[in-house]
Image 1 (cartoon, rainbow, N blue to C red):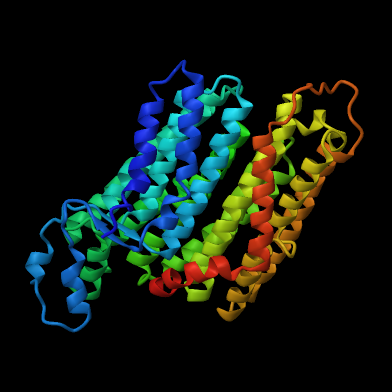
Image 2 (image 1 turned 90 degrees about the vertical axis):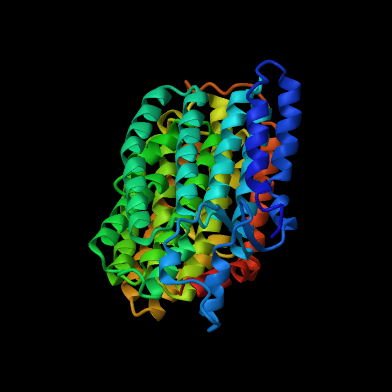
Length: 497
């Protein structure tokens, strides 16, 4: 049991609470926030794999003995004793995802502190709290603990939108939280139904109950629980029918905030999606439903991006469409397919952060994100324009950048599963993604500058340029050496199968 495992959650929470009290000491906010943000991606790299039980109780030890054919140490009656301990599981897959989350959080916080004249302790509080919550969701093997941080993450996202100060941001935040007031309680009800049937909130113990025949997995109550938990999953990740509000959330956040919000959405999708697979994969229609929802997200996201005139909305809808690729991998249910889906999740977090921060430089210079009012930005900073162009290439899956590898794996996985139609659809939608991005890029960077466009004489912060360079390097390295990522994900994928 590694004591550093809970530190990945405790550190950003403690830092957030402290920074929240520093309303006027801008220098202290900046120093402490950067130091803490820098530590976030380092902790998972130095933490040993293992399981952490809060309270010292290890409910899975006895189950492991039974699984290995050893004498049973508990009876079926004892299994239904409520386990109060919170369990965190940390493996190579969690290590990679928490590292990437920490990296995006660092650059989001780093750029926000340098693009803002007076850093806000409240804003950094919200970014740290959201990061801590999603980290806990990735680690948790306790479904009620996961729900608690699910709600905290939703509140942190609403706060980030409100704190952005963008026009109509409060209205969007209220709409999002109102929908959360429906999705959250429904998800909690689903968890309560599982608790009532199995007597546990520990996910591994629930699975043990199903496999040992102690609970009828086809109980209608369990089917209802699946529906309720899935509804919460759709809300938190931004899959249909919540794709419109999720895109609006990104458009009303500042670019660095939107980059972090998308990371929250992707990793929440992955974490809860994995739990759905672990608990309900015995239901054949569960995987079919995931594929259906994912296809709908891809089609709606990309088609709605085509008609947008705000580049933040364009990226937001494209990002929603990219979520569908992740869902396809999970829905295929094979070890190769799940690995490809998780690989796509890692790539999407990096690329979307790259795009939001890159296009954010346009907003920083012009104070507008309306593509109808933009043009000629290529001449302002051609190096940044080139990096934004490469980020768009990466999202569309153009080699040798990273998303090419994950999308190629997804196409191969669909062929191996006897579903070539999925592969064809993914290829066609990647082409449409490329065309949509190029249209936005041409409008913003390459067409003549409008006569009434005012470009402010404020220099792009070096922290922003550094962020873009790092994201580009990561895209190239992963594109050339995909095994760096896939090797960490294969064990989890094989375990799910």
